[in-house]
Length: 32
Image (cartoon, rainbow, N blue to C red; front, side):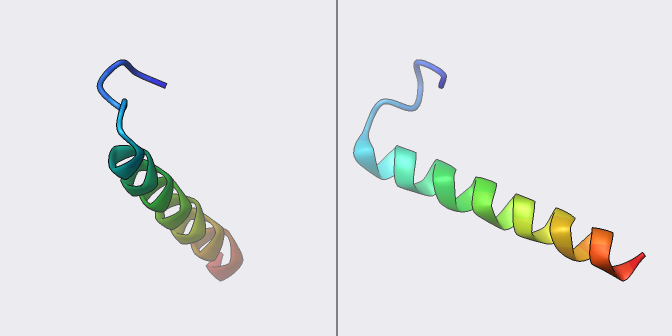
């Protein structure tokens, strides 16, 4: 975690972004 991510709201946004990125990567793996 970086020092910039210090509030609960930012943490939720960060987690959602990571979940979305992981989901997209997973879909790309399945589509190959």
